[in-house]
Length: 344
Image 1 (cartoon, rainbow, N blue to C red):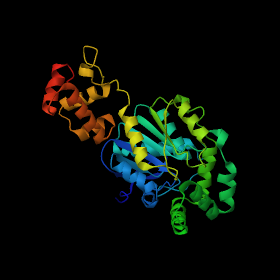
Image 2: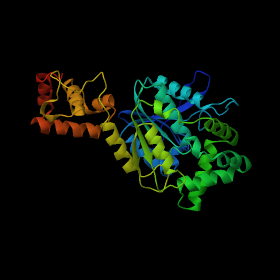
Image 3: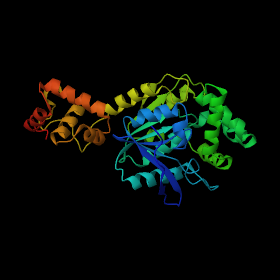
Image 4: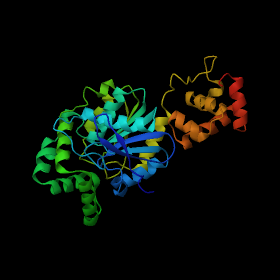
């Protein structure tokens, strides 16, 4: 699969934010994966594998935050992490998104995603945080991210590529270097780092009311595991460790973790899980009752997946479980069953 066509949304303060949409299913907004370039990310080993896995299950909205990729680059000296909220707002408003899953990988994207979820709990159904290195003030590395790139930009980029992306050959390392150099320039990168170093999630994470999944890759020593555990603890989130020697970890393990996490999300107030009698018939789970209710409304599996922010495979599993538990043969009988039990 190729990168999606680049589109643009204008922020309230005049920045042009590049974004692309690919895949089908519940909407997942991806705020970046270290290489914050929605086109070139598809040429980046490991990142490409993740994007392919995500777009097979979700409608993925990628965006390039200001200062990076195809978005406006000329950041001001007053640049702050808070400004990125306007980037997300511009894109989701342009697409008319009411609710979506928010995914941020690496230091800055995790800060962006967390802050947006805290400020917009009604729009974010779940937040996924990965490789939140430096997100807490105790583990920042200002010399690595400020003095080093200021002195030798190319060597700094090569160092980051080696420790976080583990290229398999010198040729692959050279290719990654070119991708990074097209994604960032030194001036704007240093302004982004300066903004990030003034920002800490220590006070923000406990305010997060949105369900959170924190993904960890213990095989990457560059990302302190004690910090990742603290991020999950402060966010009252679920922590899942992935295998792999690259920062994002094994994509199939990651997909299984994400699907299981989203499938277990609690019912929303607008879609109560219990029947009118106060309980679920035939041992149906709260999520199965939600699926049954929507099935009885005539919704297809893709429509149910989008409404509940789960994948089509998860919907199909729920439908199969419903038919088994209720001893029914097909969806038509299930719809009648739902009406008889006050669920439709």
